[in-house]
Length: 191
Image 1 (cartoon, helix red, strand yellow):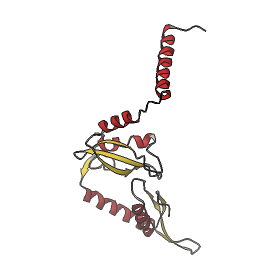
Image 2 (cartoon, one colour):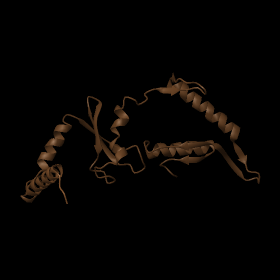
Image 3 (cartoon, one colour):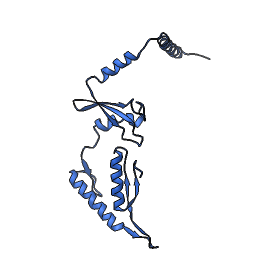
Image 4 (spheres, one colour):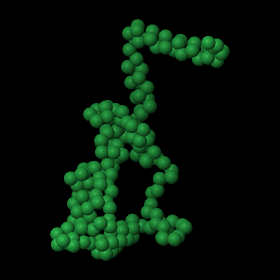
């Protein structure tokens, strides 16, 4: 086997680093104070607020660090029994939900066939959604099947909820959707 100078250097540095770490660990050096101090400096003067990851139904605990009302760090909560301080790749990217300059911060609407987005106020958007839901439900509502069985449903609307909402919101959302006769419902409150 032929070893290049680069390979020799790589192996040497790896062996020296491993030996140094093993020597520290073997000699009983406690690195916890150093790690704790580094952690303290990283988020010094930050207010810590516990929260929950919005991505899936696991509900991993997170700690949100803010300074002067601005989020500076989000990490897993070591007290959480679900994740014990770890986060999956999506959870680890939660910070981008809040600080991404490309994140929409207002309601945008694009009319059918249009090429540009129009800024709408929230009330106008909610009224438009209400109109379309009512119109679709009225046009597609099925009271009884051909065999006479009472179903009171609409097959034309699908409801998709998410884990970003707490279980209480998802429960109320399910009640509303079922009250409208919507049967295609999916969210983390599968009741």
